[in-house]
Every structure is written in structure tokens, then in C-alpha cells.
Amino acid sequence: MTKLSPKAIIIPLLCVLIVFSNSHTANSQAVLTPLRVGERLEFQIKWGFIPAARASMEIAPVESGITGAANHFILRIATYPLIDLLYKFRERVDSYTNRAITRSILYKKVLKGHTKRDIKVIFDWGKHQARYTNFAERPAPITIPDGTLDVLSAFFFIRTQKLVVGQTIERPITDGLKVVAGQLHILKHEKIKIKGRLIDTFKLEPELKDVKGVFEKSKHARMYIWVTADSRKILVRLKSKVIIGSFVATLVNYAQLFPAKI
Picture 1 (tube, helix red, strand yellow):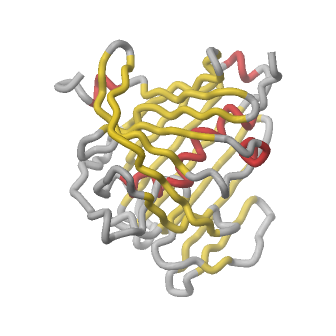
Picture 2 (cartoon, rainbow, N blue to C red):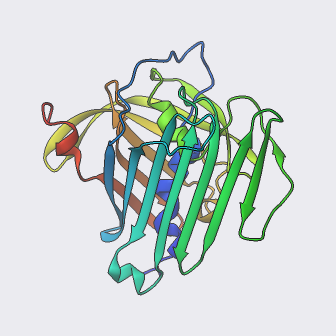
Picture 3 (cartoon, rainbow, N blue to C red):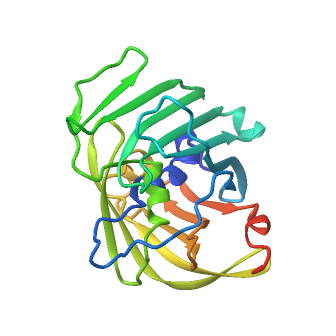
């Protein structure tokens, strides 16, 4: 069996966050979406048939003192105990945006385990700059265009948009060190089965050309994601096939979210 790459466990779920966004307002109109404080989506990530990690995405209250912030999104990822023996990974990401989710205000990422990070990106919209720090690392600020989002808030922004099959949607995304043009292709409507239940979804394909790590080594890396084909556009599955194998992230608390439909 191919040796499990520690980064490969986590990268697929994070890559989808980099490309979930939209700037073609002519073809993608904003819609009212029930993004509610208290929502929590839970996922299991498998490498092949091996359960590798758990993840959650949630909408939390905004703490006082963060000027301009009206939304607070949180991502948590943790490897399972068996995988911890090979590579322990614990990550928490916090993203703060304005109410419309059209600009990021603050982005924080804390990584513990085999490697450690304490990243903060402050968005200064008066100067159109993003300032990145990671412990003592403090590079020069980068220039950001209007509408720039961080990698986590971009996912929630897509849930405020109307999806149209055949559309390719884009938006500038930054991690504080550089800005990339995130792209997402809306492929088709598709019914998928989770635990014997059919769910009506949109099948989407992120563009991976700007994604580093394991995808950088595979010219034919592909990723597909499925979101519910309703106003909520909730992520229910992610699949990727890369040089080291296949990954699937599946929503595991879907019964709590769709009691009337599933």
C-alpha cells in the first residue's frame, strides 16, 4: 500500500474552500439563503477505504471588537487516533466577513500537531491590503482587489448565489501571501445516494491549477463536489483523485439538517 501522505489527508477538503466563489454577477444573482448562527456541518474524510479525519464547518456568533465583521465561520479538522500515529493534525480556521460576504475582515488559522502555525490575516480595505503574520513571520502586505475573500469565507459566499448549470464562476481568493483567481465549474444536476437515501444536488468541479501540495504533482488531478440543489447549497460530498489515491469527504449529520426531505 502506498504510504499515506499526511498533507494528502487534509488538502482535498481545504482545496474546495479555495475555489468556492463567484464574480460573474450577470449570470449569478444573489438569493436569500438561510445561513444561521448555530449551523454545524460534520464530515468524515476517507483515504480510500480508511477513515482518516473528521471535520466540521459552523456559523458562530461574532465576538465584540472586530470592526466591520458581521459573520463568523469556523472550520475544524482533526485526524483520527490511528492516523495520529502517523501524522497528528489539528487545525482550526476562523473567518470574519461583512454581512454580504463580499469581503473578508479577519482570517485566523491555528495548526497543532506534527507542525504548528499561528496565522492571522488582517484585511485593510482602506488601503486594499492584506497583512499576514505567522509567529514571527511578517512579510510585506499584499495588494488585494475588491471582493477578495479568504479561503473559508469563499465557501459560504457561494451559498448566497444562484447556481446555473454550465456556468464557470470566479472570485479573487487570498491566504494573505498571494491572491489567486478561484474558479468553480457547475457541471450538472445529479441525485446521489448517501446511506441509502437519494439527495438532489449540483455537481461542481473546482479548478485546481493554482492549488499547491499534492495536486501540484499530478497533472490530471480532479476534484468533484456536491451541494444540495436548494436554497441552502449545503456541501454533502467531496471526492478527489490525485497522485497518491482517492479521497471522499461525506456529510455525516445530514439527517439533522434535512429531516423533511430525507
